[in-house]
Amino acid sequence: MLWINYFRFLKGDLSKLRYKDSGKQPIQADSLIATSYEALGKNLEKSYEVLTFQFDWRIPLKASAARLNEKVSELLKYNQPIKIVAHSMGGVLVRDFILYHPQTWQSLNKSIGFKAVFLGSPLGGSYRIPYVLFGKDSLIRLLGKIDIRNNTKDLLSVFCDFPGILNLLPINKNGNHDFSSRSFWEKLRAASGDSSWPIPSKKYWMSLPCIKTRS
Image: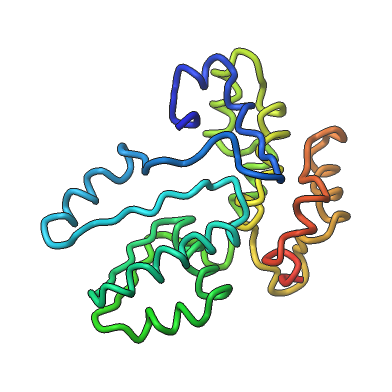
């Protein structure tokens, strides 16, 4: 995958991750990240048949939830106990699968032996997302330093239009932080001190059901 090829990080290829909202993405997720999940997978294989579900974290979670629904529906046909282990954004994906595909979820939840474990999943959204999008996160700053073609601001002009990332924005419980409001993003940009700082394009954040229902 491009985003874990460190040499391509250096030569500026992170900008090629730009999201295209029409048709198939030119870059596809084809595996889990071994450095993060290989040890867990091998340990689970001692007791279970392990099936991985890799997904593109850039695209809308609703689209990934539709793929997960297809996979779960397929597995239910075998009448075997299903266990789900979901880490971080993977847990949010399972949450959206439950919301968008209630019939499949009910069948799964009632199936014999079903269990689900969420590991550090920000089910209510995460304030780290706006922190990242305004260049405050240490990893983002590091990427901006090692990329010989793009600075942090250039990279974030790409990242801020990833619908999958926007799906992780905090849920607006008390009305103080309405991330579905363009004016709120403008206020955040003004507070950053850089009037040209990239913020999410309207065509992406306004079309996301998980954001629109949070206000």
